[in-house]
Length: 347
Image (cartoon, rainbow, N blue to C red; front, side, top):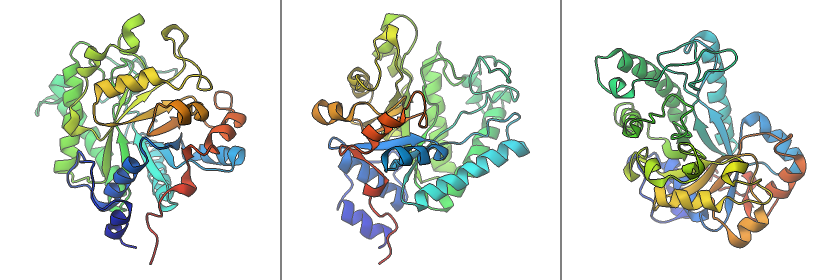
């Protein structure tokens, strides 16, 4: 079955207008399939290929979407160890698509000006804290910040090119938790710079590098700013948003937070967060891009909200128990790997 024939089988015409008008047929198939599911069921997802087996053992099912990270984590970026980690990730992503699954990918992009740092501005136990990155300067050719930015953009694009060459669609989720303030890409004083950075990446990847396998997923943080209003703060969040023409899917990362009134997934389906994203990105499909565990599927089926997909960050363990994995991934409201279309079925 050709890509064009399968696209016709899923829907004779795309009603979703992709951000990248030159999406390859495989990516158009995935985007159109997501639209056919949206509002009817929720797609089961999971972070990390290494975590799939635990879910399978617990529930007898496998997630339809698996998340990967386009970062080698190890300092310095683009060294041998760093590249070895990224190369393994690319191979795993290709294997998941070959198995019939959908690939999503974020990037814990190490601070461009601090090779000994991390994506987190505060650093980690093994990596130094990073100064604020001058995003406005980075968007101007000829500056040192622009050279640092372009070095990393080119490196990431080279690996995404491997997935494009292999015809692997990617739900690409850059600058995740974009308004949170803990990653270097959040310009809290001038959020428009962060929005411009998104557009800069989009134009470089799609127009210059011709990476037409990417479905662009915007991912908000649980909170924007501090204090009791941080959960919503819609007007401030809008300043980070790059515009509807640069986004295919709008997601948000939600974890329990007692002070903000965000509960555990067994009892809270995160309707407040869903409705926030509808205000922020009207007309877009809304995903729970990260969470502790899939929210209560009985409640999702009965009352919503109609999350496009839910992606637990953890494998089966303390925050994502085997019992809850069984209750969620095996639930009839959740779409699992075995229920996806056969993207590459031969005649």
